Every structure is written in structure tokens, then in C-alpha cells.
Amino acid sequence: MTPKKIRILISNDDGIYAPGIYALYKELKKIGDVFVVAPDNEKSAVGHAITLSSPLRVFPFKRNGKFFGYAVNGTPADCVKIAHWALLKDQPVDLLVSGINHGSNTGINVIYSGTASAATEGTILRIPSFAISVATYDPVDFTVAARFARRLARLLLKKGLPPETFLNVNVPPVSESEITGVEITRQGKAVFAEEFDRRVDPTGRTYYWLTGKKVHLEREGGDTDDQVILQNKISITPIHYDMTNYNFLDELQNWNISVVS
Amino acid sequence: MTPKKIRILISNDDGIYAPGIYALYKELKKIGDVFVVAPDNEKSAVGHAITLSSPLRVFPFKRNGKFFGYAVNGTPADCVKIAHWALLKDQPVDLLVSGINHGSNTGINVIYSGTASAATEGTILRIPSFAISVATYDPVDFTVAARFARRLARLLLKKGLPPETFLNVNVPPVSESEITGVEITRQGKAVFAEEFDRRVDPTGRTYYWLTGKKVHLEREGGDTDDQVILQNKISITPIHYDMTNYNFLDELQNWNISVVS
Image (cartoon, rainbow over all chains, first blue to last red; front, side):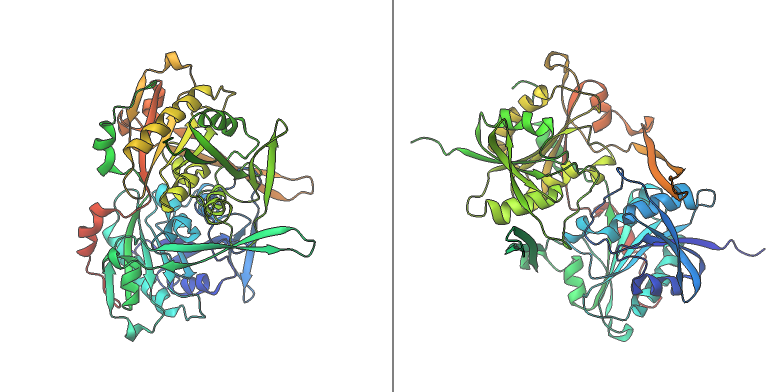
């Protein structure tokens, strides 16, 4: 009996044209049937947005003259939803991989990340999921991250994940031989020192443009995503979408809040 | 010596025109100086999106012929960022309140919620924050929730919140006398049974529209946001944006993942 072929859904937030998703596709094809459903344009920093107030359209998309996947005029979360509930409705997938994102998804960025939101959506739909990013905005070779994604895909399918949890993977932008290890991390606390550039447009009207840079915090310790990447290690953080602060529940009970007090 | 006047920033995701933010404004004016910075149109289900690829514009907005606040062509998170880093740069606020949202922000919805994202953004900026919603999509009187927001604002400023944590408040859509209490809750597990309506547009092209309804889970117990609201109680959930699943860290360590295994 031949073993059942693995069915893998991939999406991203850089858009279906991006080189990162193509590198991922080529590696994952080696271990299963791959379905690509991704935004028709770049959707960075869309957070966990979904499209409720306008229709979604789905377009077949070719690479090198061959069918590659479906482009959707929506967000990464939309792509996963429409793949699950409409395009692949009768053939559920075994795994979802989101990426490979060009740029790290670490610390605070995780909450803004469309890459992470696709993995969150997969997790909500009870599909084992991970997100994978290469931690640089410079031009980069995605092969190292793609190969790691293939290996992790197999391991994850064997081991399984707890409910409501996906893995957020960040790969340093170096060659395979320069990677010094893999670390299990927590989401870091790096914040952004932000500014809004105040500018004037050609018609004389004021506009603002967000700018800012990440501030690494000394105090956050060595076991966070950002710190580990700086050591040329691959960071893997288990992320869950139950955002209740359980540690604060008891103290908040003691506030004794009443309706009219 | 007169006590320092409280400075309060309010935002929402229903837009600056919405009745909920106006009801909130009127009540919070009783206890402090209120600054309104809100989206210029409805931004539901935008998640924690921020605008990076286009400029933001800020427009003074009047109600009843008087200046009410600033409308921004961005998301709730954009509004809080631009208020903090540009509009109120030299005069930080003491409190951020997001709402009053028309419709519950409970369970899974918290991760899609623009209302929650404004409060998250405030929390990142170290402003004590809460989000408040009325749990119905029917026409509703926001007065009960607005009055509760005013009382909670005072209490929260007295008590303080732990780092990275805000309060997510949901008020049942009934009169004050019908509210049976206030409960500290956890984020529920209610999921959506979703469908995509497949339709054809007037030019013959296919499009999809997301639809679905919330499925309450019996097994989730009585201490979740959704369950408490069904009992006509106000639900308060402490939400934090560190999404690391700490309970899974040890097991994941034991996977012994290596770069090339």
C-alpha cells in the first residue's frame, strides 16, 4: 500500500508573485501535493484582517507557463479561509505553511504580521500550521529557509501541535553552514521608536508617513526570537491565539468591579 | 492645588461618525479632557493592520457644529499611533478607551477586531487601555456601556494594569437594571461555521462573499466572555499581546530540532 500523499496549503503576505513563496513551493513539492492560495499583491502589516465588506475574486496564476496556484484579491487570512471553505472544500489539507516572508516576524511584529495571520487562520481551522520568515529586508536566497521548511513540515506532521498553537519560524539570512543551531524561543519585547514624517503634497495638503526603527531591549534576555537570530540561529516560537492573560485573572477578580460602582 | 485633569484618548473601528464613540465621548468628558482620533470610515475586521504603503491624512471633524476630533484615513491602530507620535506628541494621555463597538468582541473575534487592536496599540505605547463593545448588531442604546466605561476608567487609573495587558469589556444589550453582574472571564473558543457564497456578477465573472455564524461550544465552560454575556452580565477579559504558548515550550524543546535533521 502506498502511503497517503501529504496535502499542503501554502500562502503568504508578500503576494503570489514573491520569490519566497516560490522557493517554498519547490521544496514542499518534494514531499507532497502543494496548493498555493495567496494574495494578488503585497499585504504586509495587514494584521489578522479579513474582508467582509467587499467580494473576493480568485484568479488562476501561472509561473513559467504552468499553473502555480490561485491569486485572491484579499488578505492572507482571506486566502486560507477561501481555500478551506471553497477551493479545497472536499479535500482538506494536512498542513499549512505561510511564507517564506521576506523580513523577520518577531517580537511585536507578530501581531501586525500577515504571514502569522495565515498560520493563525490555519490553526483556527485545525490545520497544523507554521509561518516561516527570513530575517532580512536585503536581497536574499530563500533556499536555506525553504529546505528547513521541508524538514520541519515532516517533523511537525509526525509530532502534532497542541490546540490553538502554530510555530513561528525565523531563519537568519546566512548560508546553511553558517547557521549555528535551532532554538525554541519566546516572542520578544522589542519595540519600535516611531515617528510620523509630516509632509506636504503637490497640492499643498499635509500628509503623514509612518517611519521608525526597532529598539532591541537589553533586559529581554537571550531566549527571545530576535536575540537568537542575532546569533545566527533559527528561532522557533510556539504562538497561540488565546490571548487571555491568565496570570492577571485572580488580581482582576479582587478589583470587585460592580455594574454601578 | 487642583488635581491634574485626566487626559483620555478615544478611538474605535466603527469610524468617527458612529454613535458608539459619541456616547463614550459624552460620558468620558465628565471625568477628563477627551481627544478623539478615529478612522474616517468603518474599519471592522481589519485586525491589527497598520498602513505602511500609503500616506495618512488627518481631518478635523465636527459634530453639532463643534470640533469633535480628528478623522484619519487609516486603521484603528494607525489612529492610536498617529495620535501618540504626532498629534498629541508633547502631551501624553493617561488612558485610552476604544469603542463603543457595535457588536461583541469575544472569542475568536478578538483577533480580527479593530476595536481590540486600538487597545493593543495603546498598551504597546504603555498607555493603560481598555476596549468596550455592546454585544448586539441590532440598534442599541450605548448609554449603559458608556456609563460603565466612565466608572471603569476611574477604577483602572487607580489600580493600574500589568505590562502588555488591556481589558476587553463586553456589555450585554439590556438596560442597566437588567444587568445581573460583572464577571472576569477568559477569551472564549466559539468558532465560526463559515461559507463562501459563490455568485456571478453582472458581467458574468465569479466572486465570493464570506458568510457564517458563530457556533457556541458547550464544552467551553461558563467562565468565557460569550457565556457570561448570555447571562446578561458584563464580561471583562484581560488580554495580552505576548502570544507565546509557554505551556508548550518544554515539549517543543524535546523535539530536538536541528538545522539539517
